[in-house]
Length: 452
Image (cartoon, rainbow, N blue to C red; front, side, top):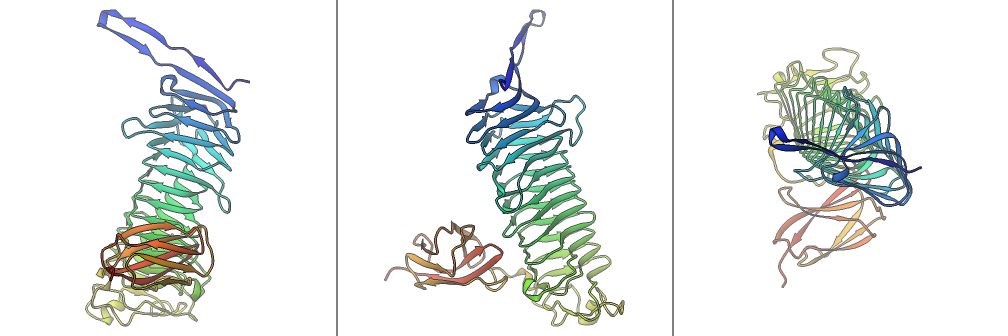
């Protein structure tokens, strides 16, 4: 069966108005795509009347400006194949419903079924059940998604690892659901029930704005959240339910609960790292059922009910020393803490020493913020090349080089156990090399100097 039927253009002359009206073409599609195919602007919109399957090894290319409209409950499946949908800033690609009265979930999804890395740029997704869906966990499909928007879907993006950059997720049930790993940059999540429901070893969430959702981030197991604004989420700003997560240099404000750890099983070697954050003007700043978090060098101020609420049984206590509470002394700080002094069923929170120097304002990257993975660098100092030797090969790892104030200078993917890194273009000075492998992050300093 052929996979499309073409409806030709019809021209209606409207001479009495002094111009002609040209009705654009529309193309009805269903069935299988068995060879490389392009959906063109001239034949847009494409109406998916029944499920379309792109078969293994085939690439479907969608030109800028194309509109793809789905009949109720229908989907586009990319089966061990590839979809390339690259719109432009002025000519985006739109995936939406063909209904005259669409509602969230009315069409199914673009389903990446063990697909090759697929690319979307300047694409818009409306009214789907899962706008882009795929396999989660080990062997998850990889996606490259940029400058795209997800509005009024049940789930915007489901089950991936990959690179997501400069996207908007608005008014969905879940902006992102079960992202399996990769990197999420420069994106905005607003007015969703859950902004992002994420989990996966090594998932980085950087420079994102998460605001006006019911819950901003709901996640677990190796998240790295940095430089984000988590603002005005009705229930919780960041809700974690397992460990090995890091929240660094974020502004967490005006939420019901700023940061909530609901993990009931605590292991000191699986702790979360919460540091350099501003956690203020929430109803509760931090609420936890886990005593093992490492919480230090944060500004925790002006939260309405409590700055810190501790719901861990009485046989466990917690130390949250070296945080700044905007209070003059320990007695006034204790008023901000809910613990065993307020309810004898819970343990106690130790706050001393208080941070009087406001260390959350300090710049640079701590060397021991997360679990250490072993690596060696030499020579140090160096003038040109730096040799990096890992304790074991991890092909999903990355190497980042930062200057001393924490500005990223370069990134390298780990391809072998011993790597030679060219640092000759760096100015002389002190730098930090960071190795990220799975759920482990470790850092060392090195000195770049001139040739002698």
